[in-house]
Length: 151
View: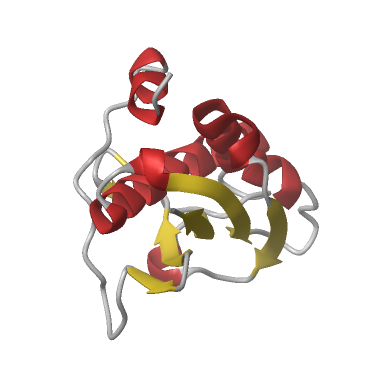
């Protein structure tokens, strides 16, 4: 089953890839690795703002991380032209806007990680870091970057 068939089976239609908000590019390639810039969580086209452990609970944060994963896939598709050329999701780094007492950044980030495995199977299993941070641009609740290997 192709990556696009899996996305369709999950009811996911990739949005248009976003544009950089400052002096950077959304993706850069070095050899067979594609590095995607951090993508912030959006809901209904607007920044999904809030802080985990204050206004946002873990399950909502997890949904936000899943939404970020969909945006990351849209950027990767736009950059490489075919998600079926992905040979491995190598690494995910997640920043979670959270209170000092919040300790479930790893559970929030599972929203992204689990979707990548649903879409790519074992090729979606990746190394990962999940950090709690004091703030993310525009007050977003989650920001995630990704490294993929492509053919």
